[in-house]
Image (tube, rainbow, N blue to C red; front, side, top):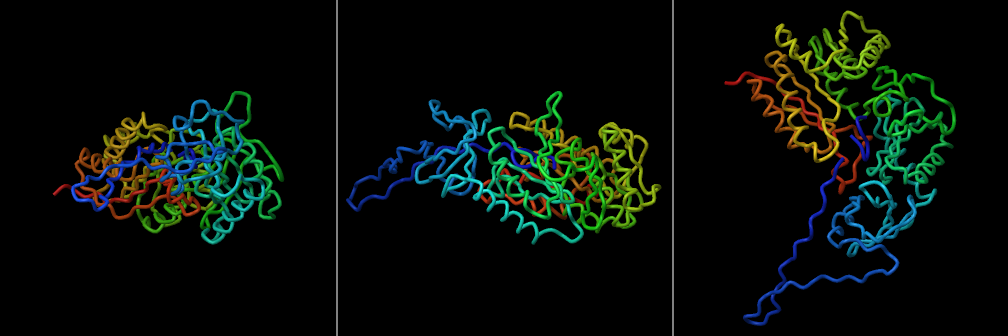
Length: 430
């Protein structure tokens, strides 16, 4: 996962509500005037700007620090009753994050029973959605499952928890309490979101201790997962359905997988009958894992080339030597973590698309993905068009998708829909 909840999004701050023109009261010649809205204020509730009412009522759980009175203070991790116009809710106070308040409930201050009910809801949904022969999935996706800032991924029965704030300690403990009695859960660990010198990135909490490499199944294919040192929590679970989609399109095709990481897309394409797959990643350990994942699935080693190299340098050299592939996949890490980095991210995507299309065979398929939350779907499509123009190609989009359904997002929290996946056909300019 290249982020999760709180992680693979910067939100748009709400603008003040525009005043609505009042209707005349039937007196001839009397003009309409705007009258300020007024709602009863609950003395015990923290008062937030009324402009936040609409988005909080629609399910957006974040309140930024500059919307909180400067004089307010509370114990980090405590639940605070808040009011914004007609909206009332219970939000977790964070003394350090730019997101000062995360709204959990409109009905009550959450406790262990309340959190267990959210975990049970999430578990039931995953059991309905998961494809056959799959034991790696996202159980909790933060805001989308009513537990803002908390992510839990499950790998062959081992649950890996990530919390995106120190203020979420109590909530995380309640999540562990809800998971511990489940017979399907072999053990629970916490993956620290920030590596600190001398601090392990994986902390065992309860149950069995996971082995250094956990073997998982995804739609009948086998992958090894490094829960401690791997990116995200070990495997990019959000792309599961996209891997399955490409698997159906690769028979007898040559495939280039850029930013391949441990080769999940590569293995899926080989399972679909690709004639040859080239996996490119700058990290040599990831490339070695991609080779092992090929072997885990019994594919002939001559069908796979694993290259440890800078992707842009590899593409430039391939262009010079005239190498081309019939399908090119580009799923880079995030090119920006804040709105201040948006321009640079868009520029990087345009450069990548142009370079990737230069080695794509005529009428080939280009699978491009973005996990940069600050880049909207529309903006990502624009980078594809610009990249195609630079490469002298004509692109037609044939398929678009987002993350797998075990990554649900709240209807009012569009930042939760971070992943963009576009399949396009490359044609000559006519």
